[in-house]
Image (tube, rainbow, N blue to C red):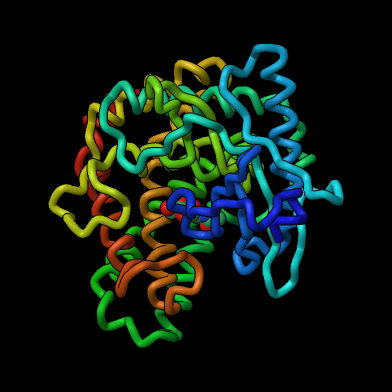
Length: 346
Ligand code: NDG
C-alpha cells in the first residue's frame, strides 16, 4: 500500500508505533520524509470513511484556530493518497490512512508528576475549548452509543449468558462486582439529560497526548478518531482513569493500583483552568460521576471482551483482558474509597 502514499517500498523503513488496542499503527521513514500509517480496524469502526472524514474536519478546524493563535498545540493532519483521497481501501489487505508524524514527539504510559498531569489536562481542556464552536452536526457517529454505560452493562450480561469462550468460571467474582454497581445507572439517568452535547475527544488517555521530548512540554493531542458529540464528563473521566494510577492499565500489581489524590487534584486544576468559563454548573457537578462511570465502564468492556474470547481489544498474553478488567475495577473501587477527599479537589 506504500505507493498509494507516494512512498517507494524498497526505500522505506517501517516500525510499529504506540500502544493502541484497536488499529495497527506504523511509523514509516524514507530518505526524504516520514509519516504514520494506520490500518483501521473495520470490525470496530464499521464506517471507516466517516472516521477519516471526521478526523479531517477536526484537524482543519484546529489548524484554522492555530493560525488565529487560539490553539497553541500542534495538529496532526491527514496525508492524502496519490489519488487525493483521505484513505485507501484495499479490501482484504485493509483500510489504510496516513497522518503526519510530529518530530521530537513522545508519548508516555504512566504520569510521573503533578506537573505532567496538570499540563496534559490543560492540553485536553484547550482541545475541548478550541472545538466548542465546531458545528456538532458536521460529525458522524462512528461508534454509536460509545460511552453508554447501560448498553455496556447489557453487553456484559449477554456475554455472561452466552459464555462463548467458556471463561465465566474464571471471572465470576468480577462479573458480580460489575453488576452490583447498578446504582451508578440511576445517577447517570438523573444527570445526563441536563448536560449539553459537546464535541468530545472520547479517548483522553495519557498516551493520546504527545509531549515534546526535548523539554517534556505538551505538543499535540492525537487520535481524533472517536471525536463525536457527547458529554465532557467522560473526557475528564478518561484522564482520571489513565493519569491517576501509578500502574499501567494492564498491570497485575493490583496492590499498587489506586487513585493518587495529588494527580487527581492536578487534573482538576489543569482542565478547569481552560474550561471553567465554558462548563455549566451541572457539567461541573457531573465530572465526579464521569470519573466513576469511565473507570467502571472500561472495566466492563474489558471483561465483556474476555468473556467473548478477545474479539475487540488487541491482546498480547493469556488472560490479558481479564487482567485489564481487574485493574480497572480496582481503580474504580479506589475512587469510591476516596470519595470525600477527591470531591474536595474541585
Ligand atoms: C481503546 C478504546 C477506548 C478505551 C481504551 C482502553 C475504542 C475505539 O482502548 O475506548 O478506553 O485503553 O474502543 N477505543 O483506545
